[in-house]
Image (cartoon, rainbow, N blue to C red; front, side, top):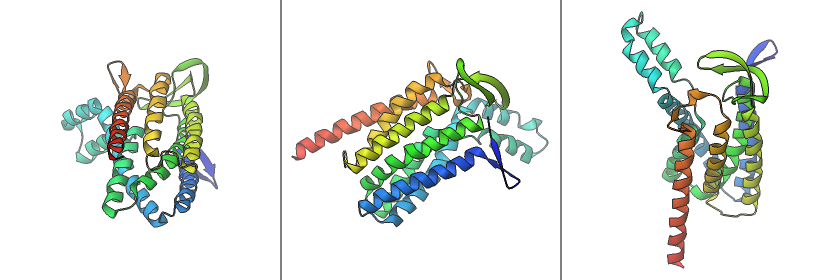
Length: 264
C-alpha cells in the first residue's frame, strides 16, 4: 500500500503518522468531555500515560503468545546462532508485533490500577476513554490499510496492493477489511459520544463500548486474511477474546443491576 511517505526528504512511517493524528484528535475530544464534567485534566492525562504503558506491554505480550511456535523454535535452536545478540535480535523481532486486544486490556488495566491508586473518578475517566478508544482506533485501522497489515481475505471485491504476510511481502487482491472496520469504529465513536453527552449509562460507558466492539470484531474477523494473528479450533484469537468479553461484560452488568435493585 503506502507504508512510508516522504516529508522534507525524510521517510515517515504512514502508520505512525496517522496514529499520532489519531491520538491528537481523540485526545482533544476526550479533554472536552473531561472539562464539561469538571474532572481534573491532570488526572486524565496521567491516567492516559499509565494506560499507554499498559497498552504497550499488553499488545506485545498477546502478540508473543500468538507466536509461541516461532519463539520455541528460536529458543530450541540457540546453538545455531553465532552469538547471544544474534539470538536476541531474532527473538525480539518475533515479539515485535502488537495485537489490539492485548493493548486494549493492557491499557485499561494499567489505567484502572493507576486511577484507583490515585483515587481518581474511575467511572468518569472510563466514559472519556470509551470515546477516545474508538476514535483513535479508527485512525489506527486506516494506518493498517496503508501499512499493509491486518489485511483481509482474497476477494474479487478487494483492492490490489502490497501486504505483509508471514514475514514476507506479497501482492494480492484483498478485501479492505481495515477500512470497513475504520468506518464501523467511526460510527461507534459517534454513538459513544452521543451517549456521553446525553449522560446515558454514566460511569459505565466503557462496558457499552467493550461489548459493542466485541460483537463487531467477532464478525469482522471472518473477513481477515492474516493467519499470523493466531487461531484455535474454529476461531481466531481475537474472536475467542470477543466471546469472553461479551460473557464477562454481560455477567458484570447483570450482577451490578441486581446489586442496585437490592439497595433501592
